[in-house]
Image (tube, rainbow, N blue to C red; front, top):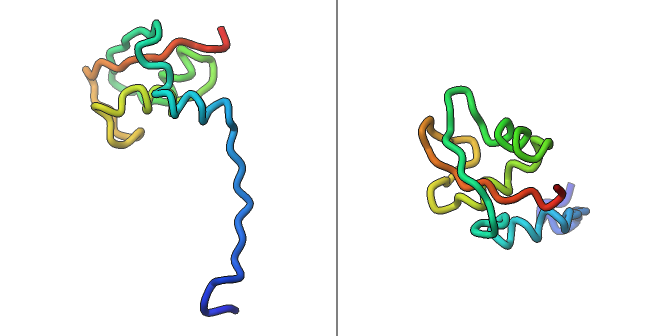
Length: 88
């Protein structure tokens, strides 16, 4: 064991198609729509509804950074911007 932890390496990969959407705010303001959060909703569920893929939830999170600080904490009644589906 190395006490300095200078022998640690990490192999990190980034899905660039998701990174571009996140960096661009998930497409906010580019023809997106709005959605009012209902009881039992979470960003993955909303993402599945709009994009067919629950894993795209970060697009919604990044488009709503002005009102969301944590993707796991959304409130009933919040109005979220849903970026357009780039794959549609």
